[in-house]
Image (tube, rainbow, N blue to C red; front, side, top):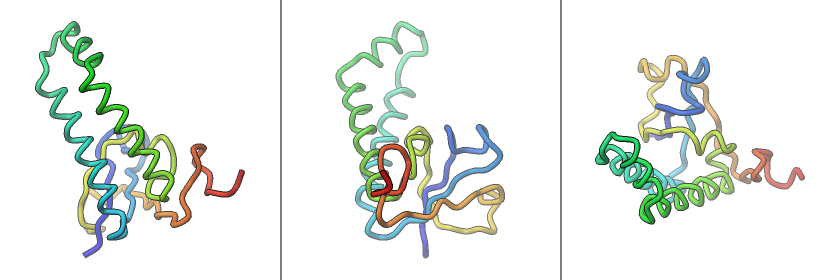
Length: 131
């Protein structure tokens, strides 16, 4: 079975545009993708566990634990760009779901494939070596 990252929120989700991105994955991508997905889940749990008042959220955001998760998220996203899984910063600002590629499912009805680029990208979202 083939797996992918499917956009479920953020910049590359159909809520922001007309289609969802999905990125097919190689087995060799799974360790780094797993680290990224764990980080995404930890951040989601941290914010879901916080009080809803704005002062509590401000304190949480400024906490060392939260800042560490955001720094890790940024570094992991850049690593995924470098290896060609993510294409640009907007993929880093998207919430993802790891799932099997099943194009007949409704989740893929408005999905656009973003093929993995084996040579990676630079920080500008251009193929590596183009600058």
